[in-house]
Structure formats: C-alpha cells, structure tokens
Amino acid sequence: MRSGHLLETSLCFTVEVVSVGTRLYVHLAPTLDVPSYRRRWESGAAPDATPYGFHLAASLGWSVRFSRARVPRRRPWQGILGLVDRLTGGVDLWHAWRNRASVRGAQMIWTLTDAEGLALAVLMRIGLLPRRPLIAGTVWMLHEWDQHGRVKRAVLRWSTRAWTVLTVHAEPCLQIARRELRSADSRLLRFGVSDSAFPLLPPLERSERSSGPLVVFAMGNDRTRDWDVLLEAFGDDERFRIDLVCRWFTEERAGRYGNVRLIRDPDLEQMRRLYRESDYAAIPMRENAFSGITVALEAAALGVPVLGSRTGGLLTYFTEDEMLLSPVGDATSMREAVLGQGREERRAMAERAQRRTEAGRYTTQGLVERYDRIASEVLAEQG
Image (cartoon, rainbow, N blue to C red):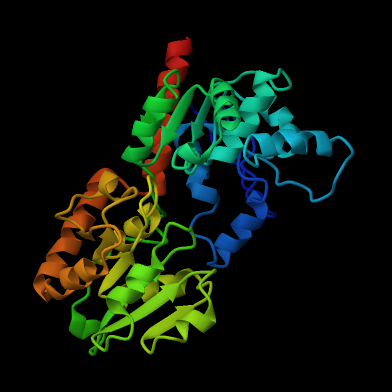
C-alpha cells in the first residue's frame, strides 16, 4: 500500500502530485479535461469526479496526475506526427508529447482506451519518451484486428511491445490478444461503472412503474448496435414500447414506428429514470468482441433485466441465468424470449444479475482496485 492523498483546490480537481506516494500518471484521451469534467460531475452531468473514476487511485496510496487536454491549434511539426498518427490508426502523438513531463515524472502509467496507450508506446519505442511501466487498456483494436492491413498489424505489434501489461474488458478480446500479440502480457481487467451514479437498487414491481405495453429501453452509440433486429422484434407491436437513445439514429427512421420514442443525450437523472421505467434494458448487437458491457452494468446495478444478443462482452460479466440472450441477428428469438418470461422470472433474473454485480465489484472503485493489483505486481517484479 502506498501513502498519498489528493490535492483539491477551490478552482478544480487537479489530482496533482503532492505526497510521497508512488507517482501515477493517467493518460486520457486528448478531449478529456479533468477540471471541466469535474465541473460536469458537480452539475450532475458526469458519473464520476474524473473519467472512469481514476481519481480513486489516491485512496489506494497513489499520487495521481492526469494528462492535460489538447489545445486545438496546429504547429508546423504536427503534420509529421499526423502521418504517424494515421499509420497507427488515429492515435494522437502530439497529445502524448505535450504531456511528456508527466510521463518523465511517473513511476507508473495507466491508460484505458487503445489510442492513448498506442501514442505513448510509439514515442517510447522511438526514444522520444522514456520507458515507464505502462498498463494499457484496449477496447476496439483487437475487435478490428482482422480488418487491419498487414502493415498496420506490424506497426501495432511493434508499438505494443512498449506496453508492460495489455488489458482487455472482455474474454473474446483476450483470446484475440493471446493469439495475435503473443509477446504481450495480456490480462482480463473487468470494467466498472460509478456506484454513486448507478447505485444498487431493488427491481421495481411493474405496478410501481406503469401499466400498458412492456417498455424496452435501448441505449448505445457504437456501430455494433443492431437496431434493425430490435425494430424487427418490437417495432410497431402494441405489446411493446421502445425508448431509444442513440446519437446517430435518425428522427426520420424513428418516425416510421408508432411505438418508438427517440431520446437525445439524456443527463444522468434522465438516464436513471429511463432505466427504472423499463421492463428490459436491450443490447441488440452485431457479432463483435467487446460491446454491451457499460449498459449491462448500469442496468444490473439499477435492478433492470438485461436483454441482449449472444455476443460482445456480456458473457464476461454475467451468465445466461442472469441475462436474457438470443442468437445474433434473430429478431424472432428475441421477441419470443421476452414474451416467454413472466414477471417473477424477470425480477428473479434481475436480482441474480445484481448479486453478480455486487460480488464482482463492477464499479469504478473496483476497476481502480483491479488496476492497482496489476500495477503492484509489476512494481514488485521490477524491484
């Protein structure tokens, strides 16, 4: 256990190094600015005080510093970095270079998504940044592996050799990593959601919520969501109502169905209400290796039954006894699964999923603790 604490100023939550704890640097996406993120959290617009709750590492003794968000202006040499960015799949080398002082001062580095870990890795491999223990998260890179050309796969293999540990949130991604990146220390690190934004709540009785059609709440912005299947299963069927949250789903398409309500960018309070007013949180997906996890965790915490496709990351977190799953692309099976499940079965399933959520610590605190365990092992191995 490291000793340390957070510095909280009246202006913002900077999470700067102010103690004798092991120095941890968290490299976030270039658009994520911690002070403004904290202001959003204070206003109820963000689930945690910092992205993914990484500030919680201070409670485990780390002295935490976050990356500074990228300033949106160009300099002459950024064009050169941009060429490398495109070769490695859109990583932001300039953002990593701007935060070089934090890298140099770190004893440990954490990232959560692919681009951030790759940007640091490239600069470490070519000697522009010093090597530091780096626990690098991946989300999309492995799912898209077969779509990459030979050159890009070679660049990715070369880059990831700078990663001390490669982490994934789903078992299918772990299998790909161990097959394609054999030299990497690949590990499963389960995700978590804020337990203050999504606390454990008992499932509501239907009489406590509403009468009328079964409410199917579906939310997601990534392209793995199979809205065609959802609409084929429940669209224009008076037995159901669909509440859909998606930035890229069009008003024109939603208007073709009399029972679809399209909601744009709900805040946290609205999201919780949408979950709690629903009979199912639906996660219809095309075949993929990673998707569906966040919605499933939020729904399970709030006591809402999960309805999904048998793909993505869902079975890494819950069993088929804790979710209602149907084959990928099969709208008929999805609809029949819902109609075949009674009220008490639905409630019991949600309760089982919630027990799994609690036991697995699928929270941001649990996520940070899992990073901490891996980081402690790495530091112990390095002496």
